[in-house]
Image (cartoon, rainbow, N blue to C red; front, top):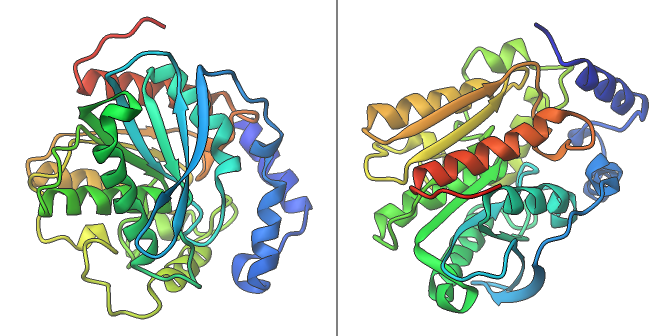
Length: 314
């Protein structure tokens, strides 16, 4: 069916800005260019409470935001890791989406501002995300969270981090996670799949940009077989949390998500997969551009609650 018309228009408008590719400009410039993201102009819906605080990380204090949709206790929780190739983005960009998702699902979302590459390469971001999960578990009662209903999730690089955290949670027997939410994840560094060729250019994220992001994060090949860095390299995913995987049709990473779904099923892990036709990488944060973003929030909320056996009134 091709790109959704509103997405074609969005890509044309972005191209008209003439912004350099991530490998073509200094780091400060490409980070500064994220200030043009359309999500920063979107209205913020009201929730019962949104709080900001600092938690203790392994190397530095970590800013977290806690989105509480209702004044209730024993709520499920989503520990969320944002995307941006482990290099870019910040929580303000995710504020509109996370507020809507928390309200739709009636669960608490805890989002962390982890350390970024290349200044802080792997395992910095991974360690920060795992530390955040540990903090949520330790403080579940204080946060009004049901410790048995905690999941992890993220988009793009955040999907990679969520998958990796889910693997380590299994490996160290930290907790039985309720789910892992992977929104167009990047779990396979090799990118030797067809979508990386078919959709390599002209759809927002490019294959060359994704490879550049991987280089900033891993800085060599030392960690290519480390499942906490490259989740698809895990010898087995048996015993990890059940997965919800969402992809976009015109994304160089679409096969990454499909392949990880297949790997999970092969290893006897429950996995739900949905691809959004006509969409591109990053549409989770395009609620002011495409109605599919709202549908994505609804699908995520519905499927998380189905997975944990919970009924909610919307």
